[in-house]
Image (cartoon, one colour):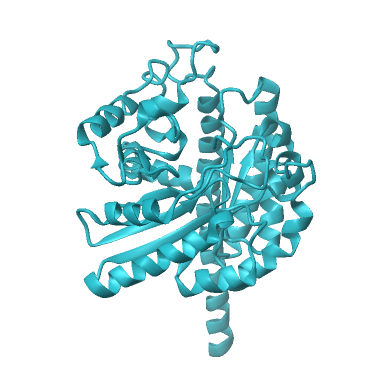
Length: 373
């Protein structure tokens, strides 16, 4: 079983859109080691995601957990995989050498040139300059580190700029998510701007792909994947969500990261195990389609349709329940834009590949003519 370990609620940044409840709690070694043992149940391999707050505030605990799992692996053969999600401000060569030795992947939160709009220190200072020297160091040790960005209504006009900046710095695996919190003030004007930003990103995607660059850009690659998988896509998403519970600093287990510290959704404890009845009840409720999503044409391709426990849009918004495409649902509109552009990009690339193949055939034919002439 894979687990997300919330090592601490402490963080040295005060990001505008963060969903983690700030606090002073940190995980003890006893809790962390018990979580490792819990994750071993029922399998021969397990994954550990070190999460926060800012997990590098508790870097010694990360070292201790990895050392503990190495001893277990030596004794039992159980395989462990590791990942850490960090804001990057505390990254240094020591930790990156350690992560390389442990084969630990690093998820690096960065909003490109919009970094200081939403990701500031508690005293109001921006974090962009601090991270400038961290990026080349990170990519030196982890060339395929994941750059993770969030677009807020206040930064939506810079979405394509964020992607271009990260790509220009050398990141080849970029995830771009939107601030879907119900308090985020998205308006129709913001969505119109977002559509324009998607079109800019689509051009970048086509250019990089036709240049045969190896890269991943989640807004397009995930939607192309959903197109290919069809009905199976949402099932896969639900299966993935079920397979990675989160452990709070005190050892309480929750179905996912966004549920942490909400006792209603607690499904167990690292010392006593997971309550399968409570887990199945919560997962079952979360898998029920919201009324607003049932008639939406995009429900099988949306990451949030089957996540009603945490993304219930509530009664503050009104929706069109008669349309096959729920155009009053903000996520539906956003997803619709993504799908249209992803499919356009996919078709465009197909044409480009065909042109390239024909050009190669013409060149080969010309070469043969010259040789035989």
